Length: 155
Image (cartoon, rainbow, N blue to C red; front, side, top):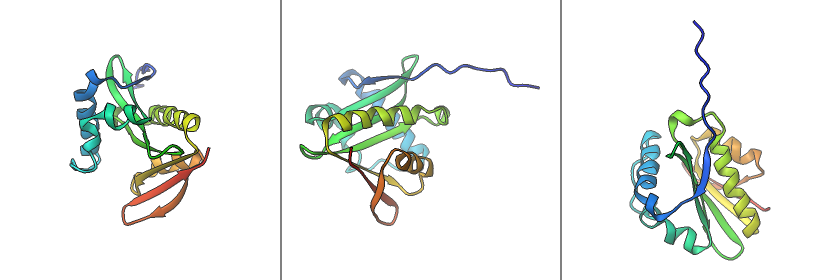
């Protein structure tokens, strides 16, 4: 029996607003938990003040929604006047494989290219699809440790 075709609506990408703080924090922690990562008070402290950490500091935090529900995120954190870091590229498990992660990543990369000269990011070496996407868009590994790959891109 053939499965019926179900059309998934396009993801709507918008800049985070303070009223979404609780939902976004729960979304990010849920995705991390689903990948086997536990909440880390130090690494995840940005989720306590998303506006202060990202937006008010020269960066941006995007959320991707479908029918008003958060299904993905991406962010830019300012390091200094010339360099930034792409962070928080996440897509809810059931929405993966549809290009939403790449859309969110490219939205962040567009912001980075417009505002900075160098872009870094880091990811767990087990996230092969993410690593392939970063390489596809011109990022190269500049350092690595046990579980983490560090990438750099110069627009």
